[in-house]
Amino acid sequence: MKLYYTPGACSQAPHIVIHELGLPYEAVKVDLGKHTLPDGSDYRAINPKGYVPTLELDDGTRITEANVILQYLAEQKPGRIAAQFGSMERWKLMEWLAFIATEVHKGFGPLWNPKTPPDVRERTVQALGNRFGYLAQTLEKQPFLMGNEFSIADAYLFVILNWSGQHKVDLSPWPALQQFQARVAARPAVQAALKAEGLGK
Ligand SMILES: N[C@@H](CCC(=O)N[C@@H](CS)C(=O)NCC(=O)O)C(=O)O
Image (cartoon, rainbow, N blue to C red; front, top):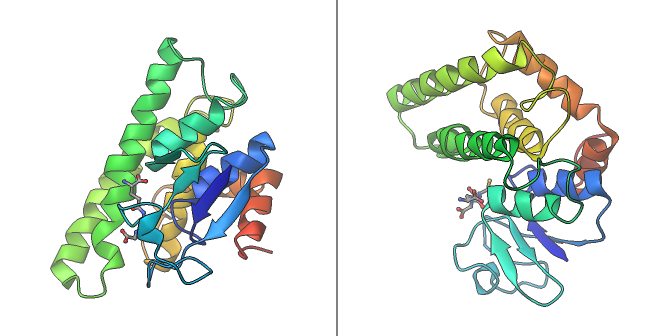
């Protein structure tokens, strides 16, 4: 299995899950600025969408979209960090994954563009704040999104919330989110994934 990733990008969520589950893999770094692979070839030949992550299985099949890759990985060791398919818990997990993907992950979109005008930035940060408030309502009551156990949704949320620092989005109004970040960052698998990306200590 190969994970195409860029350090610190959303591909870090599957990277964490691979380490959490101890799955064998090869990491292939993608230069998103140039859309190239380490050998200089065009990454779009691997994923025509041009973005990370891509997961390539041993038979050559490629899976894209972070929230689907996360679920594929979880199913390699069923019941560990994703509720069983068919259970109500699984629907609730998928609800979190969809919320993180569409409202939080993509909610950061305009902040990546240095040309985004200040008023658009302000509206973007305000909208993210509404999402953060919603997340905090859950994380004030329990350590992880699904309850007491870490799940793929937590890996995804952790990576996206980490972007707050580089985009100067203040998380201090939501101490539960800051505590969540510290809790997830302390996990050995998270530290291992960050190290594998050349980040962290
Ligand atoms: N819908 C995709 C979006 C992935 C995505 O936004 N990837 C970003 C990094 S976090 C990227 O590769 N951006 C570069 C580009 O779009 O060219 C998913 O959920 O996996």
